[in-house]
Length: 84
Image (cartoon, rainbow, N blue to C red):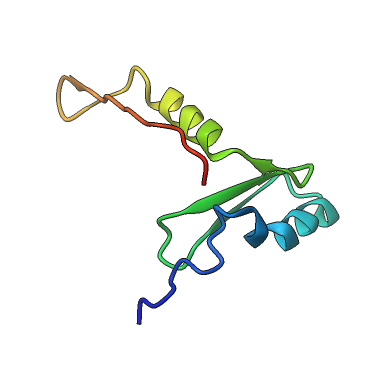
């Protein structure tokens, strides 16, 4: 158990090629694929193109900007884009 749980990780381009074709064929707006333990994901747009993970992270961070949680403390995010 737990062996090679990230095999076929959707963060790797080779793991989403089939899904990219399905998104286009089915006319989907977006597809999100997760690995076996859901700690990694890959995004495909309506054109069947992968959405870069650093862009997704930036969009998520932007959506949190200005929000408050845990009383009066602001949510602060930091990330370092890197290639997978």
